Amino acid sequence: MSSIETIYLIFFTSGFTIGFGHCIGMCGPIVASFSLSLKGREVTVPHLLYNSGRITTYSLLGGVMGATGSFTSVAAGIAGLQKGVMIFTGVLIILMGLAMAGWVPLGSIFGDYCNPGGLLSRTFGRISETRSTLTYYPLGMLLGLLPCGPVYTALIAAARTGMEVQNGFKGSLIGAGLMLSFGLGTVPALLVVAKLANLGWLKRRDIIYKISSVLMIVVGIYFVIKAIRY
Image (cartoon, rainbow, N blue to C red; front, side, top):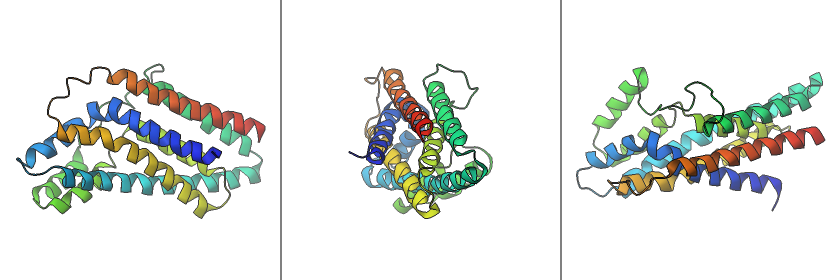
């Protein structure tokens, strides 16, 4: 398996573990409210549309970050700072991973951000007033923009991976693909929330969440080592 394929797998696995460790606690109430609002109707299709919209937003943001990483690498190379930029980004990913696990205090970056406010809240309200199943896709795209620490960490890692190529378009595709993998990994947990009203059986989300944090720390260490050898 190539290094980029390994990173894709790590992103998916991180998304999966983050889903059961973080998303259930932070965004589960929103997903549960969707199920309740359906009032006995089938929840699978609406929630698949919601998750598709959310993943679309993640992929678009990942594409931008991947392209940005590629352009940053070129610019840093011109200035003779490429290795330093790559190492710094790797260290930043490690710090974000440590913060995700609660081992390094970084304020409220990883707090409960799944309560929409301001313009986002008003837009959410207008869309959700429409009772069509198809509205769950734009709702997912909108809620994909909610500030979320694990998503930030994944986006930074996507930008760092984009630094591996000096072609903006290729960097964009890599970044989008990585965030697509990450987003797909979070889907199972949120579908569980959609299907089950009582999640009391899931007592050890904190342990699962820490596993995803360790995975991201490993990614950061890998990037630092690779930059040193660059």
